[in-house]
Length: 68
Image (cartoon, rainbow, N blue to C red):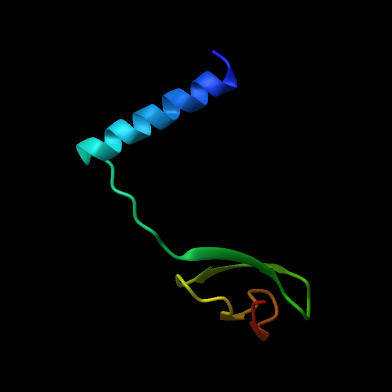
């Protein structure tokens, strides 16, 4: 089975599941990976849907910042 056939099979199965209403799709919060501007540590921030800039405190140094 090549990639095109696998993709078509997957799409068919998703369509059938959606029609039977056995699968529910919901949107959740966005996960943002930001680097601290002071110490450079990576931080994972959960942002509510629709917001682009989120305030957070660095997990390493505690510096308050805003994502870009």
